[in-house]
Image (tube, rainbow, N blue to C red; front, side, top):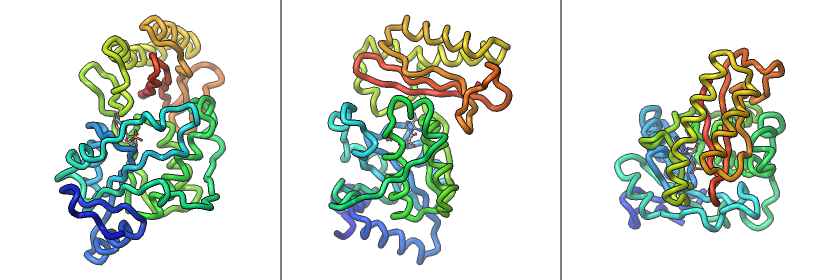
Length: 288
Ligand code: AMP
């Protein structure tokens, strides 16, 4: 399948071969390449990663692929917003190529390989979405090996994912630099997310307080409160907002994501939350 240069202003590769040809041409011209993996429904958080890509490399590829293997059967794979034409319009003048394969191209008949990590995948998201990171690691490895970029860029919004990908790339000697981009937020501080469109007006209002509670909880701990006391109080406040369930609200070592055994942070700490409101699951995090 050749490059699609007709559908949108930004050319689209829909197969590994079309992607490789485009990258090979850039390499012949001596250009460096950045890859920004996404599932589409692009917002300003994604675009900030694309901007970072243009700072770090001559050419930026944005992949758009709603990866089925990182969703559990009860999760929102079929409801996940798919807005390719709008995404392409948002990328005009920002990205040089869209890579939008279909599932049969990524996972042809007989596909049998899964990359699964221990350690950093296990706590937090791993407890509640036990198959999620194997799906993420496998698809990200494939995207990187297909594009062979100099840098691949991920958002700090998915902090644990960023740690998982750094670990995988180090463990498998994949020759790519992994960069994290800062979390982009709405005016009230809600972390931008493709899933925010699921929120009703009331849920949206409550969701905007999640980051405030995180910040105040982190501040308590920074001032000397015990982690368990501060996070229990934070969880109570999140539920009082009208959230239905908190999967976790924890302060962990930001690199390894292990808990602090003596209930006091000793080095770089991060507060991480996943909570459900209505049918929407939101995640957020920030440094302590
Ligand atoms: P997604 O399309 O949700 O899988 O996200 C694609 C990439 O964008 C991931 O690396 C996310 O961490 C990143 N991302 C999502 N939301 C934000 C945000 N609000 N700020 C920065 N990066 C984000």
